[in-house]
Image (cartoon, rainbow, N blue to C red; front, side, top):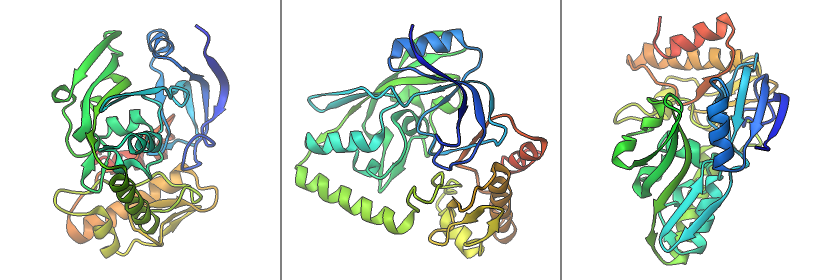
Length: 302
């Protein structure tokens, strides 16, 4: 198996947050066979996709990382689209648009990949990944075997899937979309892009998307705004002035800056509304003692 490997790979340049140290070794598989080989041979590798919803420790990752960005093959047949885990979801949204297929309009402005979108059951504008999902192929890293999972087996709910509770790594997923006039699909996608422009920072301001999940029947952004956190700063990180549920890396922010700011946001909402927000961002890497404590507080672990 020939697969690109880079030692001491700088994760800062890979992450949309532009934060984090180096990975000891980074592997870039292109095929599912290469991916399975790596997952079989490597000891507890960290799997990263577009790294758009991830905060990486400043200490980096003292081990092997598999980065799926080269796994970008997809194919369309009738109303179905099958895509490998590394495909960027805006590309799939455009493919569906060209084919007159509806169901992916919500993903047009997402910076992430299929793996991340399925992992967290990405959603927006009353659409979600689970709406069109049919089946996927995963690698069970505990038992070192391939599994095919249907929609029921994925246990989808708000921002959740079985991939978060079992040691499964998504290799590919298949979706069934609904035929619709291309003009209607294009119009919805344009509206979604316009909406995102006003509500979310562009990636020219490094960020990792929404910081906290919405609590049941409420909006994390609304609670944070009412709690007065907009514009709060910590080191090089700031709560975005345009929307209180985003943190932007203004000036070479450290991971600890982001974690401290997240704790301030969390505490302001908890103190004002007795609601404990749950992080949507994943924190990975070799954590310092301070980072560990800050992260455990956010996860409500003492």
